[in-house]
Image 1 (cartoon, rainbow, N blue to C red):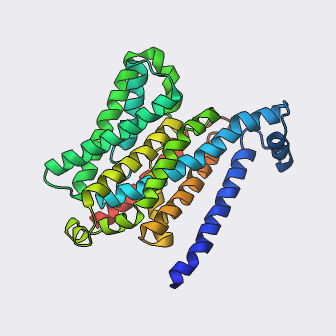
Image 2: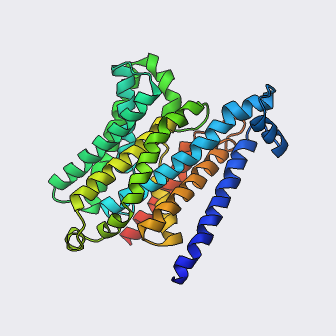
Length: 330
């Protein structure tokens, strides 16, 4: 066992401990701060006091949803960067979040679908179709170069976001209903959203874990990957499906929480290296900690009003993107 491998259990344990503290902070901190004893009473009993209601009905769903969304987007970000061989790629920059958002808005407004379970599947389908369109168009435009993939993805994201705005502007009745979802936040989300999307997240996570070793081969060029016996087409299709499931379920639960899939893979790579077996686990833990911490910060940045958590993650992500672009230009 190498020195780097011997440090992995300690790294994972440290991230898990940080996540436990973040979830505890999510339950305790907000407009009203609750003590550990109040948390225990609310979670262990069926009391009807104000503290019991707030903790069980409002704090608990977001304390569960934020880590799940962060873990899913972190894993999806690692896979997208490997598929595109581009470290500034993410579900956001490739338009997957926008595709999932457009699919949900179109299904809600155009087809009158209101079932959260159906909308979760619609979001996953929207993310998957967008990934196919982005990579297909990039391939037909002269090859799957990292820069071309990102440029096509950013263009698709801008187009789809504009279409969402047009649809909601024309259908004002739906605007108020979907506005809370489009802001990218965990506040006022029902616990049922978690239960309905767990199957999609679990399937996407299992697929990502099974693809860890094949994705290691895909980090090289296609010719080298083929010489190593990697079925490139199968790996890419399966990876697209996994990314679509993870991104779609995340968007269905919290709306488009931006740039998590950009920031987290860089942190995971710095901690555990480039092998996907270790990097995917680290990305899941770091993503869970990151979004939970961002959700806590969102409660205080414009206190007493809450900011969308998507605004917090976007500020950090945009800053990192500028740094990465500057390094590439240097």
